[in-house]
Length: 124
Image (cartoon, rainbow, N blue to C red; front, side, top):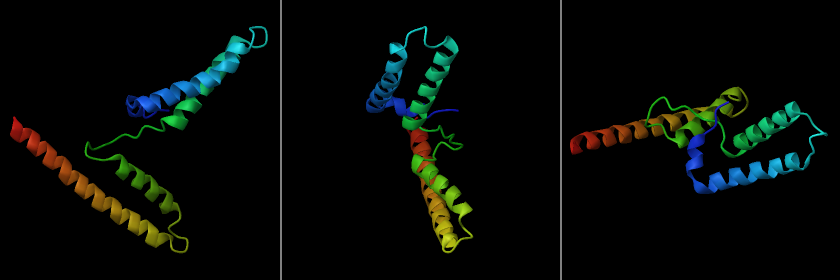
C-alpha cells in the first residue's frame, strides 16, 4: 500500500500525523514486557502506523500525465463510483455529466500544461 507522501510537505499534516502516531504508541510503552511478546508488539506497531497513515495521508495516486490535477483524479473516483450506479434511475445522467466534466477539465489542464511547457522553452 502506497501513501500520498506529498502531503507530508505541509507542516500541519506532518504535525497531525506525528501526534496521532504518538497517541497510538502510548499504550505500547505502558505495557510491560511480560504481558506481550515482541511479535504482537510489532504487529500492533505496523497496524497503528498503517491505519494512521491511510487515515491522514490517503492512497497515493499515480499521475500518468504531468498535467493531471488532484481535482481531476477526484472526479475520476466519483465517475468510478457512478459507473456502478448508472443503470439505476437517474444514474446514467449523473454519470454522463461527470464524464463530460472530466473531459472538459482534462482538455483545459492539458492546454495549460502545454502552455507552461512552451513558456519554459521560450525562456531558455
